[in-house]
Image (cartoon, rainbow, N blue to C red):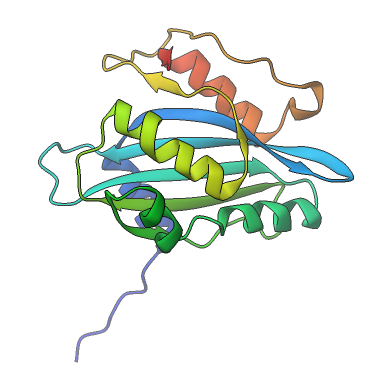
Length: 188
């Protein structure tokens, strides 16, 4: 009997990212009664290969979570994306796979949701059909979607929304800054 190697889930996650291309991202906030809003960023990607056997979109949510209450609020919002609800809202959705969130003791919460589709997703499908349904289900306040130009090149800057003073130095603001400094995006 051969010895099986342990599976490194984080390495699998990183390897999967290498097989995907980023399509767009958007900032979002989650309102909390009696507390400040939680700031976040959602990355939308798809398989790099146009001949991929499976059509899907990967949504990676990153949110600043300074305390346990914020982590619970983010987890609750992300749990609202369920297969049945999304299939009722968007007929082209065949399945929804939610990865467990990461961020138990961190100042940042990261979660990924893969949406398997019966159609090849284009910008119109994402903007007009999918994102409005996700926004309704999650009940988040998103900003405009920033679309990646096909010829995104390092070193070009796109206009970015201002970052609040309290978000300066957070992982979300650092990611936002990196994206705006290293890639050219187009507002959608």
